[in-house]
Image (cartoon, rainbow, N blue to C red; front, side, top):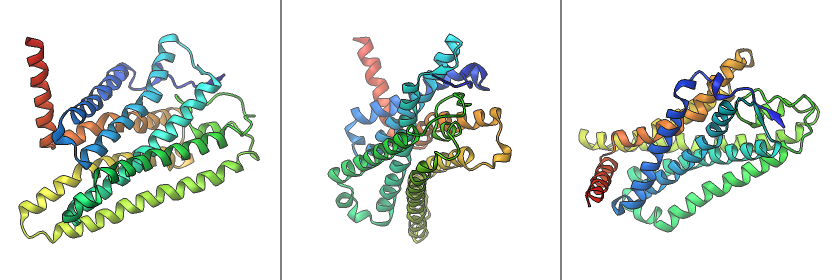
Length: 300
């Protein structure tokens, strides 16, 4: 058994924890259902958004329910197998989200910089292959990380010091000489993350150049509006991840680590649906149609 002392009862958001979780499930569930049911949204952009919402539901459901259960039962332990599963799912789902955000950057690049080739470059088959690549590569990366992490003997006790199991906190329990095998995996993953990040940056540099060449102000505004939701989601994901993994060790403390963990594990899955729906007329119209349909069914 491993100890995870950061339960919901000690979380700064404890009074609204359940509400935030249900709001995230509802918002992402609405997007998933709306895109699946409305044939007008069966386009590459909404196909990738559908996958992103699935990943958001999975990521918040991996951490929050366990912590809520610990709070309700007043326990702070998790089984070894449960911790292993949590580490794998977190690596898989968060890695999948960043991979998918990279694919979505390519979608925006083609839509703005090569609009005449959009149907060819982002055909149904190509979209499925790219989404499968994002899910598959993240699965293999998570499997490699989990196998490498849990092959290391834990000789520094069993207190994870976090409200869910995560690789950096598991490695703190290992012997100082035995975690070197994980370093190679970390280096490979870091290279992949930097590669995805550079691809997103270069895509947006090309997009901004193309937008600035559009002669009409209305055309430029429309093009920027197409990119802003994705850019906001990427910025939120990257900034919260940097706060969690790149903060100086001197700033580390149990309470601060807990707040940062809540920030990157809970905020993006909850806020992403709002970012994508606030200024998206097509999605709003589809949600209204679905609401009218549900009301009509209730009256029958």
